[in-house]
Length: 315
Image (tube, rainbow, N blue to C red; front, side, top):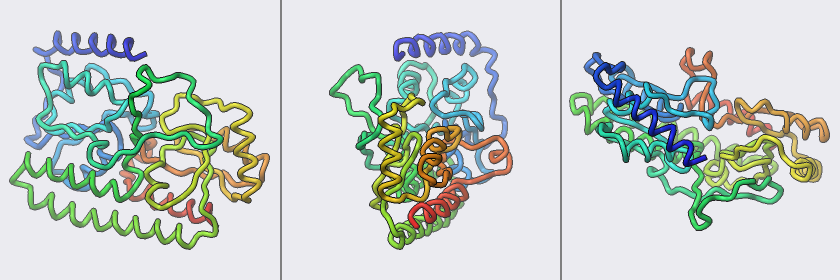
């Protein structure tokens, strides 16, 4: 798959080169051009800079983030960007390929995974094992979902802000002020999650789904069980995995089984039907629906909704 994607990217780069004289992307606004691959850095950037930047999110609203492949138009936007923000890690290997081979590159780049202390993705008891072994068994696979912890979000926001300030000194004071205010709100969010966990009657959450919340549970000392790791390509768990999760919910009288956005929630439905638990959605903030995107939904709003369902799950 990696070789196939490298070939596809090479073809896309050739198309971009052939079309270079008729560049289809022009930023005539006079503002900084900022391109983010997914929703969290997109929203963080607009909280810092507002309308002082020309901001693009490459992932289409409503699209599953793990299914994204860059188009030639996306590559042109990246190459012309003042600041390009991506996640990093295994799912963004195409970015490293692009940045390493393209003649034209963005002025600055930020990999979210480099903004924090990254941890390896883990497989906990009962979780479905990945069917495909890594090509290099000694290579560490880091969990990429770093923004799910508000504390990590603060570090990411600071890194984005510093890059914007260095690129646009005329608006640096505005970026500093907005960053300070936004980080206070993220700190309050963190404190509210801590309070919910400390006052909960239990310490375990269950996901009948992928689990992109390692940084979140590490931050608040939560235990978890789930069907798949965060970046798993699998959608059908074994009977043993489903049985383990059903037994877990029954034995510990877990009141809520979570699913994540865009998943359909079929595994959670099966567990809930067998246990009487309630299915609720815990948002990973990877992406949002087109309606939410058009309505200007924010990371803070999504995480505030997560506070409500977490409180119910720990009751």
